[in-house]
Length: 330
Image (cartoon, rainbow, N blue to C red; front, top):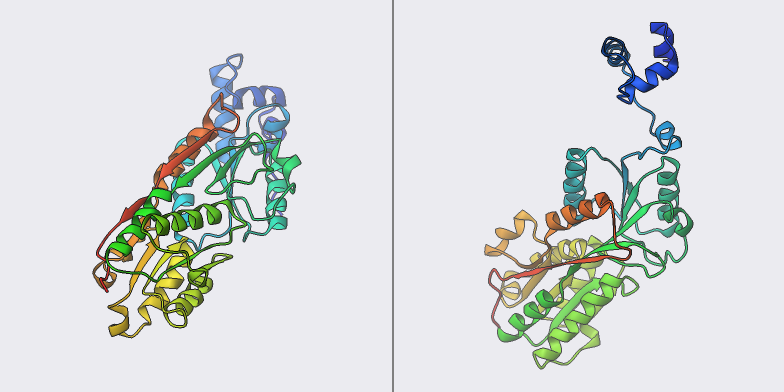
């Protein structure tokens, strides 16, 4: 097993004190240029890596940021993680990603591990039902809640999507085209985002003069399978002529069911997705959807993480957009 390269091992190699090596690696001006150059050259040769834990013990910031996501199958989460990782790298930050699968216990373990490496901040999509789990550990880091909010997380900034207007516009457009049986598939209302999107859909129905039909509403833990199965029910057993989706994975599943409809039936129905992956632009001549500004969310998140003087409970909200690529008229 290879020996770990440390400041002391570099000092032994060069026959100098480990304090001198430490000062040189920290760019202390009290070390001569010749000595510093020799130390840096030997450190590069041996592949020395600065210890984040040791830096934290000295009171230095670790420059580590944690990102807690339910999964990275979801197109939104994958793109957000990619953009945040890129921008963190450009700003000298190291991003560590943990997947929680919306499990409070997995979330708690991930938060504890971030504390072990002295992470400076954590960006998290809170799991449903997390309550006080992890709250003690969260106090040791700057916290940014993404997309959803859990009231029990105190002194945490939030970067959210305001999709209410876009959802209301989508319902209005469907009603304008003659759809009266409009189904909705969204996340569990135990999630703040699930509650908000369902409320926006119901607001859209009211504004269009349509009653709320509980038989056309489906909310549950979001997944591809959930979206596919509920869309199949709504289009067949419930007689929906249009469906609006309230989540990325839900949309892909519901689209699968929509495309499985007989062509004649599909031509009389309408689909409004959530998110805007590239293939939405060419399926059936273009799918209408609720587009979310993913990159803007990621850049704002980084701004919050790196803000030296953050405001407690600061909230940043970005508007979604209804993209109408042509919907069926019945």
